[in-house]
Amino acid sequence: MSNRNHNYAIVGTGALGGFYGARLQKAGLEVNFLLRSDYDRVKKHGLIIDSPEGDFTLPRVRAFHDVHKMPKCDVVIVALKTTQNHLLPKLLPPLLKDDGVVLVLQNGLNTEPEVAKIVGSERVVGGLCFLCSYKVSPGHICHLDYGTITLGEYAKNYQPIGITNRLHQIAIDFKRAHIPIKMSEDLLLSRWKKLVWNIPYNALSVILDARTDELMANPDTLILVEQIMREVVAGAKSCDRIIQDDFIQHMLEYTHKMKPYRTSMKIDYDESRPLEVEAILGNPMRAAQQAGIKLPQIGVLYRMLKFVDAQRQEAEKTRRLLGVQ
Image (cartoon, rainbow, N blue to C red; front, side, top):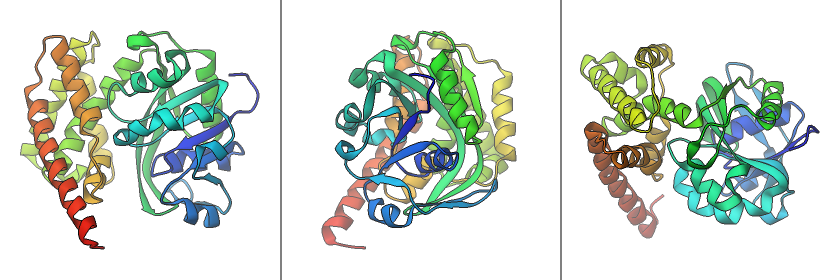
């Protein structure tokens, strides 16, 4: 990547990709949005963002439904759910400039290696989003709270390679769009830290049909959340990544202060979409198992979610066959 103005592609214009992409365009950057079901609406009416930091509308955006009609970009942001990653081999190569990079803004573990198989490890950057947002309707996104992105370089097997010039260049663009940025010298450690929050709250929100504030208000679920967090810390240690004890308390305090929130997995469940069970629970569980460490509570959550997800998808399949709206 050169130091000139960059252009961006957003692959997955939902609650996350739509929000960040809209912020980047509002800041004056060229942003190209890839859409599927929302294409017609967004092509005609643009994007609407509701936010405590200021509502705004982009009446015109560069909307596409075919990657082959999009310009090649300096930064391709993958904001799809990981359940859609099977589409990436067809989507990414036509979008990427010769010196471009893919910024992976996805939950879970081992998402970057999947992308690296397609474009090469040297062209992958990881990003972890601390964002509360949801899609109200096609092209209409509601931002509730937070928004910080932690950027980190990916190298094969998650070897830390420090903060590079291209990370700083991407950070400049995002800061210009008033998106808070942190830098990580160790992407794998950062991913495990994110899992300390993502695993308990995403899993329990679906299994117990609860928002984050409800999980925090009940003494039994609060104990369970903390126990699961400690198991995630043990999983990180099995991968030679140490998370300090006070980080758990920090995450609990962070969630206490959070506005009542349905997690991304709960929203997917309520909308009858496939759940990101493998990326958020399965991959970390298997990584620990490869190091000889079992994560029993996470294993129970994983099996329960696999069942719930299968039941939900079968019901959705039946609904569609019957033509029920």
